[in-house]
Image 1 (cartoon, rainbow, N blue to C red):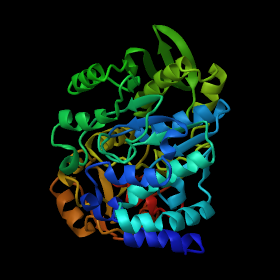
Image 2: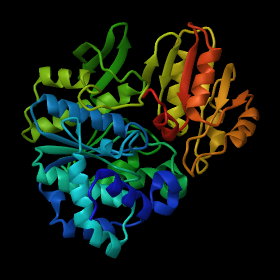
Image 3: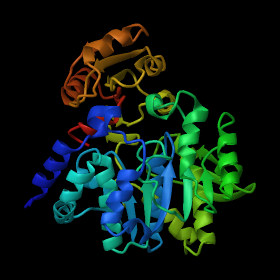
Image 4: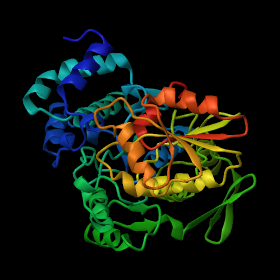
Length: 427
């Protein structure tokens, strides 16, 4: 029996394969383990309403915005996301409050015999824990973010009120497929019979995959950007709905320009929720969006860490995510650009490195996980694309060196991997 939180968490880390540490070896290609765990727990996944969110980029931001809107509307709202940045309890929240550590201890003690019998992955256990917690705490609704893919993801044992699919781009090609169509097929696996699905943006390469899956599942499908057009103004975001002004000068705390795509998906999902008896007023909608970081504790999405010099971090790490980050960097005003950069070794670094600005000073680092790409190797690969800098393996030492070299009008960006951002001391 475990008597404290650290003991329980250490047991999970030591005994279960963890994707963020070992990569593909931790990925289970069916739902058997999750279904068995849920059976042991009396199927908690059916004891609360849920919203299921999949996608390559944007699913985390979308999940947090939806949870905040529901919370502002008076609903007791669960939120399950992954991976965590600082502490395991970030993965499971109710109304922005992280899961009670005592519950974690009790859950691990309760489920330990089943862990030793079923031998699940770390992710499968965290999903089961989230469902059990939400059921016991009697949430009104829970927003459930897919971990990886969709069709075979452990979260795909719920029957949601609505399914949401965000941007599709290349990531985890070894597990999900080497074409956008194959990746979209995996994401479309969350579509359930008769359950409406919102796709945040039309992408010509993959929209047919979603249309066909929705048709065979007899599920209503909506492409959000057919309904909502969102543009940046000097004072925020302007939203057009059905060719009429819907929201003016909306100020959301998620500052990346890519959030316009996610916001369209959130707004269309709210429309569907209203049709299924959720009471979400326009005032609560605006309030939830404007407080989406404050109410959920979301970190690492174009997050400002200091002002002079301006220092920003972002967890974008695949081709499409870094493309958006580089575009955002280009809109900033600064004298000199400093980039603290680290990656994992099971990605294709060349594709991403080809996007990065050449007129920057680089500080190549590596997160303290087995999957991290060695910083010396990263520097060598970066040099092939004209990216020059120094190796400072420790993330925080690299940041410190960038701060020492930068003046007050410079810009420091930190990214390349979720795990680099997770190690920032000041986050």
